[in-house]
Length: 269
Image 1 (cartoon, rainbow, N blue to C red):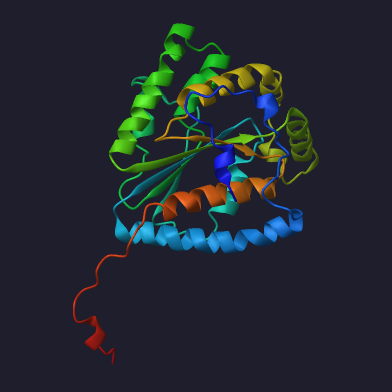
Image 2 (cartoon, rainbow, N blue to C red):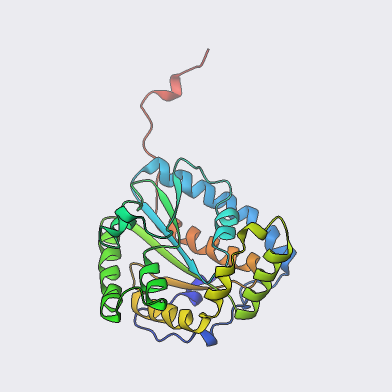
């Protein structure tokens, strides 16, 4: 799967209306066949993540962003099924605490970045400070406007210190969001996920689209690229992200550490 087709080139202009959230150009099969292809990718990712943990040299940061209901939680469940929880962490960023608000907006983010051998998944991220903050006018434009370059510098530092950064924008249509919100409302086992606040946020769809467009245009770099992932089809979303992460891990050319000498002569009695 040529996931590079979904990668935003540095400095490129982005028109999200031209990115089809139903696209599945790299898979000819149907939903059942797509789901059936995922376990093999899970096993490959599990093996590579185990190697990452064993070698304890590289760091991997995966950033998931998207509109409400775009599938961040589902991506984590399905793409990372089977990975070793010792070496994989999920960090979610909700409303900042008073302590976090007393520091700069990147303070709470930096504490969650991966150490050597680790993979960390950001379920939402530092980009909330140029998305929600912008849309709701929590700070003036002069403040959030300078954060794009601050974020680029932050991610450049992480990359130069050995972190592989992969950022995924889960791209759904407004109609698909409507259906997913209705499904949550109709299913009593999923209704806990529904909030009337989701409806208020939905009214700001165009504002969020403009904010995401700015993020994609200004912060997709060679060292921290954005991928616009077609996410109306959940199974295709999972295939794209799995291939992107596996490709990045394979590119690290990892090796298992050298074993202690003399192990071939040992017999366990």
